[in-house]
Length: 396
Image (cartoon, rainbow, N blue to C red; front, side, top):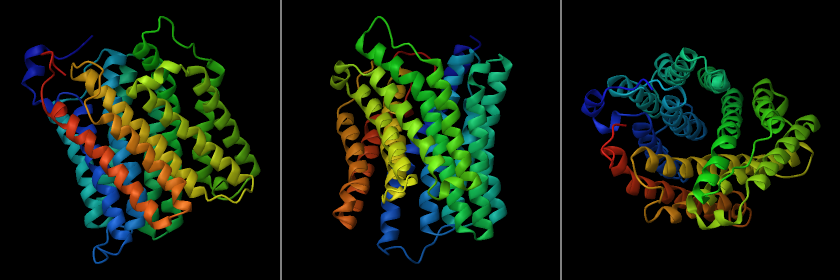
């Protein structure tokens, strides 16, 4: 493995030694602050301050292209070192990349002129895609090329959202975000399909893991980006039986995976049941969208929030909790408070998609409180780990 020599690696400030450190931290802090800020805007408490596109556009955009993309970048730019044996980004280049992300977030809040906003916003996903693509290409690791394609499509979706902002077209902004959400769902299916059964096998000490079904992996790999493209092109924006059938197939595929991966012992391990529950929310989101496309009178926003809160937020929280432990040289035992964080995240989703039907305003505030507390617990318990050297003395 071509890694930095030990003296050079250890001279780098701990926060900048691997990409997961700064991006897990800033992504978590954005998640912690964004929802209370959005609820404050909804209540009219900060009506005199408007970010680019208004608070609704900011809320939709930033939790996807700000929060989720930061975590994706931290995970992929760390994992690619293991996948390829080539050194990952670190030190000053990593600091520069993190600053681009930060300046883009501030640009949205400050409502800067659109040319500057567009450059800052699109530079980050393009840079991540370029870094991933170059590293994978150097070792000709074709198996992971689809990840680069999804990153490029995410950049295009972000571009559509920014174009809608510049043109004052709310529909295009929304289209770009919905396209991006289902592209993230595709990445969750791709990466989750690898790590969840692997983590389950290792976490339970099983000798043999669940063998993948290549046909199912290919079906989900093609179907999920297809949904995103149908949002970008327009057909998925309105009820459509054929789109409903596609969602039904995806739901069945995700549920089949969950059944095959299931082991009763996993419910005793928070780092495992949190992953499985998050993936379960992905299946529920697909079921909800299928029903809406078939004409059932359900609000598609509920399915979208199943995806964004339960699946995306849940998988992110579970994954960064485990990855941070492993990459800082610690045993895979979450610190106190994290089991509560996983519970709170799932309660946030239940409040936003179910309880909201009975108590609309109260459920929104409860969901926001549970979400914020979940990520506050991560920041409290894991922030020091991200800022300090590995406990085993190794670089990274």
